[in-house]
Amino acid sequence: MHKILYCAGFVTLLVLNACRLSETKEALPKQTVDLFVRYLQPEKEYKAEAILLEGDSLPLAKSIRFSNGIRFIDKEMNETQVTENLLRYSTQFGGEYAPQASFVFRDKSGKAYTIPLRMEPLGDIEVTMPSEPDGQMNLNISSGGVLKPEENLVLVLTDRNGQASTVTIEGPSTSGAYTLSMVLFGNPVKGNAELYVVKKQLHNEQKGKLTVHLVEELYSASLLVKVP
Image (spheres, rainbow, N blue to C red):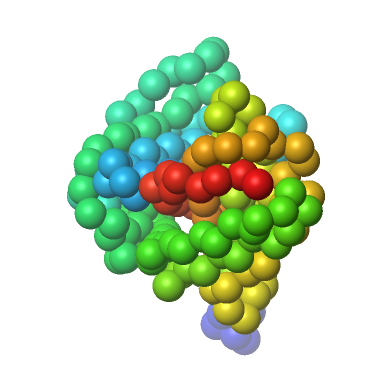
């Protein structure tokens, strides 16, 4: 009888301890990692930034250190104390676009994460300008121009007076060919101008207690066009 009571008590103790561990785990502060990557295609240059935040809500969160630092591709990111409450990691380097690029780090508890980049680079870009100010611009991107729901294209047109105007194409899309009215660009000055495309992707993901925000930006080379 005593053995049965002992066993029952021991099992109860294990259950209570398991519950306490579960409650302690749930009570741990939430962590959010903000990741940013920019790639300049003509310069073949990467810039990456990362911030790890801890707190139950973003307004109250504070930035903390990655337990063993953070790497992007094969580069160790540098730690910078921007302000008293903001700690940022960054790196900048040249190289070809890496389709298998990723961030690798551990959170405060030591759990390892690999966050891959997901955006397809832009292929060759062709632009046909209209002959009239209210005509249609035709944009064709040979690859990487088909947009996912979380992606967009930003067209930046700079006229000969240096005035820039932008038009955003929101995903999803079914083709890399787009037709846009020149009216969308406002009133650019007639004559030679430069046009480049920025492809952007915003990816949000929940990995247990870790919230991942990843922003990718890719800048095309500038094209010489003529505003009618």
